[in-house]
Image (cartoon, rainbow, N blue to C red):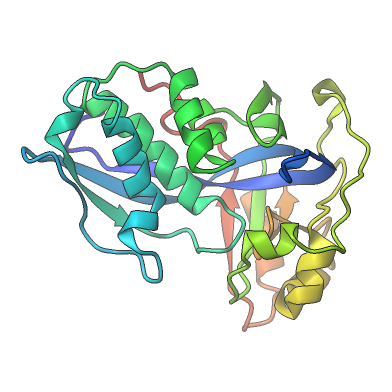
Length: 282
């Protein structure tokens, strides 16, 4: 695709097919192992060039001041490097579809798409590896969206090994609660000593999510969603919550399971992507 200023730029959500906490660094950062899977639920961003050097978000995200918004911070971080036409500034429009506080990586994905898009549109010419370094300062999940491939990630989220994931559909439920990541990782009840594995040893269905017990204890809605979903299969929470999912081989099977859910459980069927939609962008 010929990506340009007129394009609608996708920022896909992710699922953590498993998520283990394998240790903690001296500076307090948790050491994780996980497999990231992109799905076809996505936010959309649009960019318009300016001539006055300002970075302007067209409409604020409720509850998130512009100066804290990862999209604005990503654009400013790239602009500070002074490459290409970054000094001209940009208007940014963001259409949100990914729920906040759901463990789907929406904010991180928006930031990554902003870096990828403006690196291209401003002609900055930075390699993806440099964009990943910028992204890591913004948030631990930002680099994987810039990496652009389903992968096994470890460390604080900066080391990747690409893995083959099944062509699957997912029944995704969205509890009506926003889970703050800091509250989950700060809990003394969180397990932090799950044995690490080598990326080559990962197989679909392996492991679980070490953050689930804490999230379920703090947010009963998450526990209810998992309990009901487990009647359909191997249900898991993604990220630090609140969204939960079950994998299916076909859309029809996922749709049939969705029809059995209670009416008060927000849910949708999503498909796993073979790669990030901007994976081929240069």
